[in-house]
Amino acid sequence: MFCLLRVLSQRRLLEDTRQRENQVATRIQSWFRACKVRAYLSHLHKKAIIIQKTWRGFTARARVRQMVKAAYFIMKMNFYEEMAVRIQRRWRGFFQRKYIHNFYARKSYLQGVAAKNDLLRRELDELKKLQRRERDCLAMVKEQEAKVYQAQRLHHLISTKQCPGVFNSPFRQAPHEMELLLRQVKYQVPTRLAPRGRARPQGIPSPTALSFPGNLGSPWTKTSRTCCSRPVLSPITTKKQQVMTVKVWTMTDRWSVNVLIRFF
Image (cartoon, rainbow, N blue to C red; front, side, top):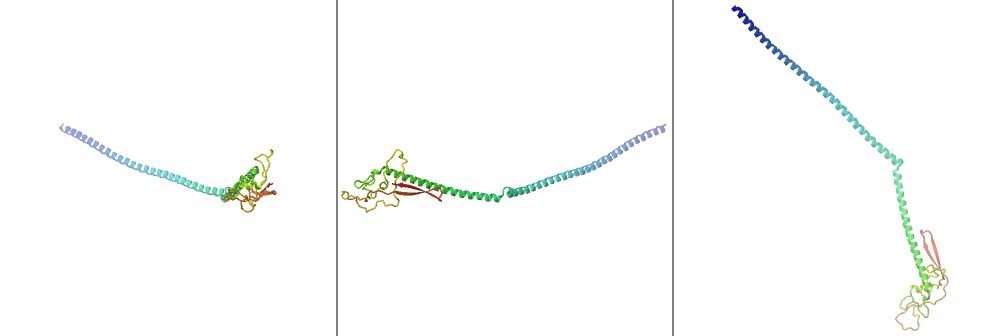
Protein backbone atom coordinates (compact mmCIF):
# COMPACT_ATOMS: atom_id res chain seq x y z
CA MET A 1 0.00 0.00 0.00
CA PHE A 2 2.71 2.26 0.96
CA CYS A 3 4.59 1.34 -2.16
CA LEU A 4 1.55 2.04 -4.28
CA LEU A 5 1.20 5.48 -2.85
CA ARG A 6 4.84 6.08 -3.36
CA VAL A 7 4.59 4.93 -6.92
CA LEU A 8 1.56 7.14 -7.52
CA SER A 9 3.30 10.18 -6.03
CA GLN A 10 6.31 9.52 -8.12
CA ARG A 11 4.17 9.20 -11.25
CA ARG A 12 2.37 12.42 -10.34
CA LEU A 13 5.74 14.16 -9.82
CA LEU A 14 7.02 12.83 -13.09
CA GLU A 15 3.85 13.97 -14.84
CA ASP A 16 4.26 17.40 -13.37
CA THR A 17 7.89 17.48 -14.38
CA ARG A 18 7.00 16.31 -17.86
CA GLN A 19 4.35 18.98 -18.18
CA ARG A 20 6.79 21.65 -16.96
CA GLU A 21 9.41 20.42 -19.36
CA ASN A 22 6.81 20.31 -22.11
CA GLN A 23 5.83 23.91 -21.34
CA VAL A 24 9.48 24.98 -21.24
CA ALA A 25 10.18 23.21 -24.51
CA THR A 26 7.09 24.83 -26.02
CA ARG A 27 8.26 28.19 -24.83
CA ILE A 28 11.76 27.55 -26.22
CA GLN A 29 10.32 26.40 -29.52
CA SER A 30 7.98 29.40 -29.70
CA TRP A 31 10.79 31.77 -28.92
CA PHE A 32 13.06 30.10 -31.44
CA ARG A 33 10.36 30.10 -34.04
CA ALA A 34 9.57 33.73 -33.24
CA CYS A 35 13.26 34.63 -33.52
CA LYS A 36 13.42 32.69 -36.77
CA VAL A 37 10.31 34.37 -38.13
CA ARG A 38 11.49 37.77 -36.98
CA ALA A 39 14.87 37.19 -38.63
CA TYR A 40 13.14 36.03 -41.80
CA LEU A 41 10.79 39.03 -41.75
CA SER A 42 13.74 41.31 -41.12
CA HIS A 43 15.56 39.69 -44.00
CA LEU A 44 12.49 40.10 -46.20
CA HIS A 45 12.12 43.72 -45.10
CA LYS A 46 15.75 44.42 -45.92
CA LYS A 47 15.42 42.73 -49.28
CA ALA A 48 12.21 44.63 -49.94
CA ILE A 49 13.98 47.88 -49.06
CA ILE A 50 16.80 46.96 -51.42
CA ILE A 51 14.33 46.14 -54.17
CA GLN A 52 12.37 49.35 -53.56
CA LYS A 53 15.55 51.36 -53.44
CA THR A 54 16.77 49.83 -56.66
CA TRP A 55 13.44 50.29 -58.36
CA ARG A 56 13.00 53.82 -57.13
CA GLY A 57 16.55 54.66 -58.21
CA PHE A 58 15.89 53.12 -61.60
CA THR A 59 12.62 54.97 -62.07
CA ALA A 60 14.13 58.23 -60.81
CA ARG A 61 17.11 57.88 -63.11
CA ALA A 62 14.80 57.10 -66.01
CA ARG A 63 12.63 60.10 -65.18
CA VAL A 64 15.66 62.33 -64.82
CA ARG A 65 16.98 60.93 -68.07
CA GLN A 66 13.71 61.82 -69.76
CA MET A 67 13.75 65.26 -68.20
CA VAL A 68 17.35 65.82 -69.31
CA LYS A 69 16.48 64.57 -72.77
CA ALA A 70 13.44 66.88 -72.94
CA ALA A 71 15.47 69.81 -71.62
CA TYR A 72 18.23 69.08 -74.12
CA PHE A 73 15.66 68.85 -76.90
CA ILE A 74 14.08 72.14 -75.85
CA MET A 75 17.48 73.79 -75.59
CA LYS A 76 18.46 72.42 -78.98
CA MET A 77 15.19 73.61 -80.51
CA ASN A 78 15.65 77.04 -78.95
CA PHE A 79 19.18 77.18 -80.31
CA TYR A 80 18.02 76.10 -83.75
CA GLU A 81 15.17 78.60 -83.63
CA GLU A 82 17.54 81.40 -82.63
CA MET A 83 19.94 80.46 -85.40
CA ALA A 84 17.03 80.28 -87.86
CA VAL A 85 15.87 83.72 -86.73
CA ARG A 86 19.37 85.09 -87.23
CA ILE A 87 19.61 83.56 -90.68
CA GLN A 88 16.16 84.87 -91.59
CA ARG A 89 17.03 88.31 -90.25
CA ARG A 90 20.26 88.42 -92.22
CA TRP A 91 18.59 87.14 -95.37
CA ARG A 92 15.59 89.46 -95.08
CA GLY A 93 17.86 92.44 -94.41
CA PHE A 94 20.01 91.53 -97.40
CA PHE A 95 16.95 90.99 -99.60
CA GLN A 96 15.35 94.25 -98.48
CA ARG A 97 18.55 96.23 -99.01
CA LYS A 98 19.34 94.51 -102.28
CA TYR A 99 16.02 94.38 -104.08
CA ILE A 100 13.32 96.34 -102.22
CA HIS A 101 15.08 99.13 -100.33
CA ASN A 102 18.50 99.36 -101.91
CA PHE A 103 20.80 101.09 -99.45
CA TYR A 104 23.14 102.51 -102.06
CA ALA A 105 20.27 103.59 -104.28
CA ARG A 106 18.59 105.24 -101.31
CA LYS A 107 21.90 106.86 -100.36
CA SER A 108 22.45 108.17 -103.87
CA TYR A 109 18.84 109.34 -103.99
CA LEU A 110 19.23 111.22 -100.72
CA GLN A 111 22.49 112.73 -101.94
CA GLY A 112 20.74 113.81 -105.13
CA VAL A 113 17.89 115.29 -103.11
CA ALA A 114 20.37 117.13 -100.89
CA ALA A 115 22.25 118.48 -103.94
CA LYS A 116 18.97 119.49 -105.58
CA ASN A 117 17.87 121.19 -102.36
CA ASP A 118 21.15 123.08 -102.19
CA LEU A 119 20.82 124.12 -105.83
CA LEU A 120 17.20 125.14 -105.31
CA ARG A 121 18.14 127.05 -102.18
CA ARG A 122 20.86 128.91 -104.07
CA GLU A 123 18.44 129.67 -106.90
CA LEU A 124 15.86 130.90 -104.40
CA ASP A 125 18.50 133.09 -102.75
CA GLU A 126 19.46 134.50 -106.13
CA LEU A 127 15.78 134.98 -106.98
CA LYS A 128 15.27 136.77 -103.68
CA LYS A 129 18.22 139.05 -104.37
CA LEU A 130 16.99 139.74 -107.90
CA GLN A 131 13.48 140.48 -106.67
CA ARG A 132 14.86 142.79 -104.01
CA ARG A 133 17.02 144.48 -106.65
CA GLU A 134 14.01 144.82 -108.95
CA ARG A 135 11.90 146.28 -106.15
CA ASP A 136 14.68 148.70 -105.29
CA CYS A 137 15.00 149.68 -108.95
CA LEU A 138 11.24 150.15 -109.29
CA ALA A 139 11.18 152.16 -106.09
CA MET A 140 14.04 154.30 -107.41
CA VAL A 141 12.20 154.80 -110.71
CA LYS A 142 8.99 155.75 -108.85
CA GLU A 143 10.91 158.10 -106.62
CA GLN A 144 12.53 159.72 -109.64
CA GLU A 145 9.15 159.99 -111.35
CA ALA A 146 7.70 161.59 -108.23
CA LYS A 147 10.59 164.08 -108.19
CA VAL A 148 10.06 164.84 -111.88
CA TYR A 149 6.34 165.26 -111.34
CA GLN A 150 6.98 167.58 -108.39
CA ALA A 151 9.46 169.54 -110.50
CA GLN A 152 6.85 169.88 -113.23
CA ARG A 153 4.30 171.13 -110.73
CA LEU A 154 6.82 173.53 -109.18
CA HIS A 155 8.25 174.76 -112.47
CA HIS A 156 7.16 178.31 -111.68
CA LEU A 157 9.76 178.39 -108.88
CA ILE A 158 12.67 178.22 -111.31
CA SER A 159 15.35 180.88 -111.14
CA THR A 160 15.55 183.64 -113.72
CA LYS A 161 18.05 186.34 -114.54
CA GLN A 162 16.08 188.94 -112.64
CA CYS A 163 14.97 186.88 -109.61
CA PRO A 164 16.54 183.83 -108.01
CA GLY A 165 14.28 180.88 -107.35
CA VAL A 166 13.22 179.40 -104.03
CA PHE A 167 15.66 176.52 -104.41
CA ASN A 168 18.52 178.79 -105.54
CA SER A 169 19.38 180.47 -102.28
CA PRO A 170 22.34 182.87 -102.38
CA PHE A 171 23.57 181.39 -99.12
CA ARG A 172 24.18 177.97 -100.65
CA GLN A 173 27.55 177.10 -102.11
CA ALA A 174 25.94 174.98 -104.82
CA PRO A 175 22.43 174.98 -106.28
CA HIS A 176 19.82 172.69 -104.84
CA GLU A 177 18.97 169.41 -106.56
CA MET A 178 15.42 170.59 -107.22
CA GLU A 179 16.79 173.68 -108.93
CA LEU A 180 18.81 171.50 -111.27
CA LEU A 181 15.76 169.34 -111.91
CA LEU A 182 13.64 172.43 -112.63
CA ARG A 183 16.20 173.48 -115.23
CA GLN A 184 15.89 170.11 -116.98
CA VAL A 185 12.13 169.48 -117.10
CA LYS A 186 9.34 171.27 -118.88
CA TYR A 187 6.20 172.56 -117.29
CA GLN A 188 3.16 170.33 -117.84
CA VAL A 189 -0.34 171.70 -117.66
CA PRO A 190 -2.52 169.42 -115.48
CA THR A 191 -5.61 168.01 -117.13
CA ARG A 192 -8.65 166.25 -115.80
CA LEU A 193 -7.93 163.13 -117.81
CA ALA A 194 -4.55 162.68 -116.15
CA PRO A 195 -4.90 162.49 -112.37
CA ARG A 196 -2.32 164.11 -110.22
CA GLY A 197 -0.96 160.88 -108.79
CA ARG A 198 -0.74 159.22 -112.25
CA ALA A 199 0.80 162.01 -114.29
CA ARG A 200 3.70 160.80 -116.41
CA PRO A 201 6.97 162.71 -116.14
CA GLN A 202 8.19 164.70 -119.09
CA GLY A 203 11.86 165.29 -118.23
CA ILE A 204 14.73 164.14 -116.12
CA PRO A 205 18.28 165.45 -115.91
CA SER A 206 20.99 163.52 -117.68
CA PRO A 207 23.35 161.72 -115.29
CA THR A 208 26.40 162.82 -117.32
CA ALA A 209 25.31 166.41 -117.92
CA LEU A 210 27.04 169.25 -116.12
CA SER A 211 25.06 170.88 -113.39
CA PHE A 212 25.95 174.53 -114.12
CA PRO A 213 28.42 175.20 -116.92
CA GLY A 214 30.41 178.37 -116.79
CA ASN A 215 32.61 180.12 -114.30
CA LEU A 216 31.72 180.31 -110.67
CA GLY A 217 31.09 183.94 -110.07
CA SER A 218 28.37 186.23 -108.81
CA PRO A 219 25.62 186.76 -111.40
CA TRP A 220 24.87 190.17 -109.92
CA THR A 221 26.84 193.15 -111.16
CA LYS A 222 25.93 195.31 -108.24
CA THR A 223 25.20 193.81 -104.89
CA SER A 224 25.73 194.77 -101.33
CA ARG A 225 26.60 191.22 -100.27
CA THR A 226 30.30 190.62 -100.70
CA CYS A 227 30.72 187.75 -98.22
CA CYS A 228 28.52 185.29 -100.10
CA SER A 229 29.05 184.02 -103.63
CA ARG A 230 27.12 181.46 -105.64
CA PRO A 231 27.58 179.93 -109.10
CA VAL A 232 26.22 181.53 -112.21
CA LEU A 233 23.14 179.88 -113.67
CA SER A 234 23.06 179.04 -117.34
CA PRO A 235 20.48 180.86 -119.46
CA ILE A 236 17.10 179.28 -119.99
CA THR A 237 17.00 177.88 -123.47
CA THR A 238 14.81 175.41 -125.27
CA LYS A 239 15.82 171.89 -124.53
CA LYS A 240 15.85 169.21 -127.10
CA GLN A 241 14.09 165.99 -126.58
CA GLN A 242 15.98 163.90 -124.04
CA VAL A 243 15.67 160.18 -123.62
CA MET A 244 16.86 158.41 -120.50
CA THR A 245 17.18 154.67 -120.55
CA VAL A 246 16.67 152.99 -117.22
CA LYS A 247 17.75 149.39 -117.19
CA VAL A 248 15.61 147.32 -114.88
CA TRP A 249 16.95 143.92 -114.06
CA THR A 250 14.30 141.31 -113.84
CA MET A 251 14.21 138.10 -111.88
CA THR A 252 17.13 136.60 -113.82
CA ASP A 253 20.38 138.17 -114.96
CA ARG A 254 20.08 136.70 -118.44
CA TRP A 255 17.86 139.42 -119.88
CA SER A 256 16.80 142.91 -118.98
CA VAL A 257 14.11 145.37 -119.93
CA ASN A 258 14.95 148.90 -121.01
CA VAL A 259 12.44 151.47 -119.84
CA LEU A 260 12.47 154.60 -121.95
CA ILE A 261 11.35 157.81 -120.28
CA ARG A 262 11.05 160.73 -122.65
CA PHE A 263 11.30 164.27 -121.50
CA PHE A 264 10.35 167.35 -123.50
